[in-house]
Image (cartoon, rainbow, N blue to C red; front, side, top):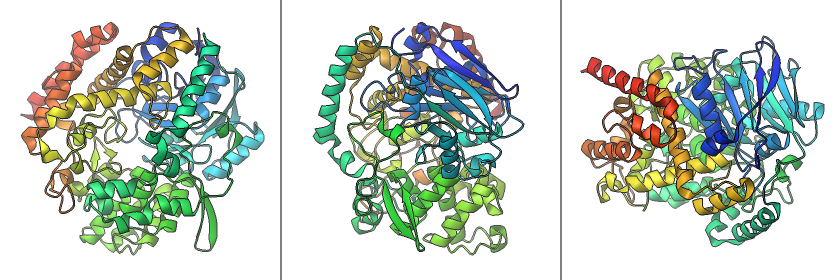
Length: 626
C-alpha cells in the first residue's frame, strides 16, 4: 500500500488499553481518509441515539489522504457525534497534526470510552501511551501545550482542550499547536467528557509513495505556481483577514447579529486586512512542527498587539474577527483580537461564541432579558466590549448566564424561553460570518449541509442576489462546489489552494498507483454525505422539517447592494431548490433520504437496509405531524 500506513490506533480510555488495527486498501479507495474515514468509523461504531457526551460516543482524528505529501495538504479531520447537533460532525485543522500522525505510522486515532482521571495521549514512531494529565487539567491551552511539548518532544504536534472542553461547554473546540482550531460542533466537549486533555504526536517518516520522483516534480511545480499565482495573491497578503470588507460590501456580513448585513467600507476596515498587517510580527516563525510541511500560500498572519496594558500574540482569521467583533457590534480591533486570544486559551468555538453572545446582546437591546438573569452583568447591548469579554469567560467556566450560553444559541434560546426567532442557526449549529441574503441559492448550502450551518459545504456560482432568478437554477453549481470542498476534506488539503479535481486525481494516483478520476472523487463526497444523512435520520433528523433556515434570513435586507433580498424569493422558491438538490443527489425528492439504488451505485450496498429504515422513519414522523 502506498501513501497510507494501513494502520489506525485504537485507544480505549475506560480500559486504559491501546491496540493497533489494520485497514485494507479498499477502504481507502472508497473513503480516502480524513472526513471519509472518520465518518465511516462513527457511522459503523456509534449507533444512532448515542448521547454525544457519554462514554459510548467516539472521537476520530483522521489524517487526510494526502496530508504531508503535497503542497497545502496539512489537515486532520476530527469526527464525532456533535454535542450541539447530535449529528455526525467533522471539523478540520492544520498545520502539523495530520502530517505528523502519518509520519508516526498511523492514518487515524480512534478514542473510545472515558477515563476516570485526566489523561493525555502520547503517540510517536509507531507507539503510543496514555499519560496522566492531572497537573494540566484546568490549565489554559497554551500552558497545557507547552507542558506536554516539554514532556514529550520539541517537535510534537499537540491537540488540546481548554477549560471550556473540560467543563463540557457544548461550544468547546480543540486547539492544535496554540492557534489552529477544529472549531465547530463542540468536539472539545467530547474530549472533555472522556477526560482527555490532549493528544501529542510526532513522527519522522512519511508512508512510501509509488512514484517518488514524479511526486517530487509535481510538488515543485504546484508549489511554485501557487506561491506566485494571481489567484492566491489576496490570500497570500491578508490571509482570510480582509473578509469583512468583502462580506460587508456584498450585504453578507453577520454584523449586529445579522441585522446589518451591509456595512460601509469605513466601518468594515476597522476589523480588516490592513489592521492585521499593521500588527504583523517581523520575522516571526511558527513552531518547527508547523513549518515542517510547507504551504505555498502561507496565509497565516501572526500578530502582536496590546490590550489593557498587556501584550498578546494571536493568529486571527476572518471568522474570528467577524463573529467576535462585527456580530457583537464591537469594532475596536485590539479588543476583538483579545477575544480571539481568549477563545483560543479557553478552547471555545469563535463562531459559536460570537454568534451566541451577539444573540444575547440583541435580547438586551430589545429588553427581553433582565439584569437579574444576567447575574449582575450590566450589559448595554451591541458594542459593549467589556460585556463580551466577561461573557467569554463566563461561558468557558459555565458561570451564571454563561452556563446557558455554553449550550449554544439554539439550546440557550429554548432554555430562556424567548428569542428563538432571533437565534441564527441550522440544526443547532450556529451560523458563521456569511449572511446568505446576499448570494443566490447560498442559503440552501446551510439548509442541506450535513453538519448544519457551515460556510465550508459549497458555494453556488455565479455570484448574484437571490432575487435574480429561481434558486434551483444554481443547485448544480452548489453540488459541484460542495463535492470539491468535501474532497479537500477527505484528502487533508486546504481549500485556499486552487487545485482542481484533475490535479488532485493526478497527485493521488502518483502517490498510490490508483486510477482515480475527478468523477470518482466526486463519488467519494456523495458516499460520505449519504452515510452522514442516513445516520442523522436514524437518530432524529426529519429533513423536510429540519433542512431549513432561521427566521432572520426571511427578512429583506434593509440597505446595500442586496437591499430587499431575502435568502430566497419566497418559500416556494426555497422548496423547489431543496427538492432539486435532493433529486440531483439521488435522494427521495420529498423525504431527503438517500435512495437504496443510489447507495448501490455508490458501492454502499451494506447500508441499503439502513436507508430503507430511514425512509420509513421520515414517512411515519411526517404522518404524525400532520
